[in-house]
Amino acid sequence: MKTNVAIIGFMGVGKSTVGKLLAKKLGKQYVETDSLIVKRVGKSIPQIFKEDGEIAFRELEIEIIKELALKEGQVIDCGGGVVLNKINIDRLKQSSIVVWLTASPLAIARRTSFDGHGRPLLNYKNDITSIRSLLHERKPFYELASEIEVNTTGKSVELVVNKIIERLKQHEDFY
Ligand code: S3P
Image 1 (tube, rainbow, N blue to C red):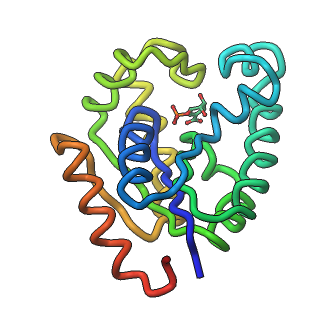
Image 2: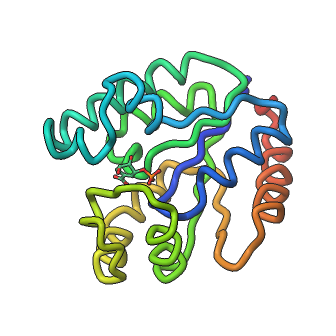
């Protein structure tokens, strides 16, 4: 039986907003890998990338996912790069249904420039060309990892959440 929902997808697709409402509606706990990492090391994400490098960040991500995958009843908001290490997906899948949120490059550019998060991988510029190329690179990873896909472009949070719930109901192993 799976009691967690893991939300994956590119930066700025709306994972946190959707994840929070989904958790509320399902009566599950909302957890976010990025903030757990920040809490654990006492540094911001940009600081970790700058001082310790991306590999160190990915190792922290692996550590956090390993712990979360052992717990129950959560909506896990996964950093956009969680899918890059297959071990994360293997571990998540043992206890979670994996939901992939997508959005158009333009919608992503708009959201990432307004939400105030420092995103080292977009060089803090949120330019559409970097977004398009990284999206292209990442797409096969998200595709392979997910069981449910929902496009968020032009949809209200409520609608996206309802769609996810509808799709989750089709999974007999989800509780
Ligand atoms: C990353 C996404 C970010 C954060 C880090 C790296 C990525 O999380 O984990 O900046 O590799 O896509 P969000 O997807 O929540 O922005």
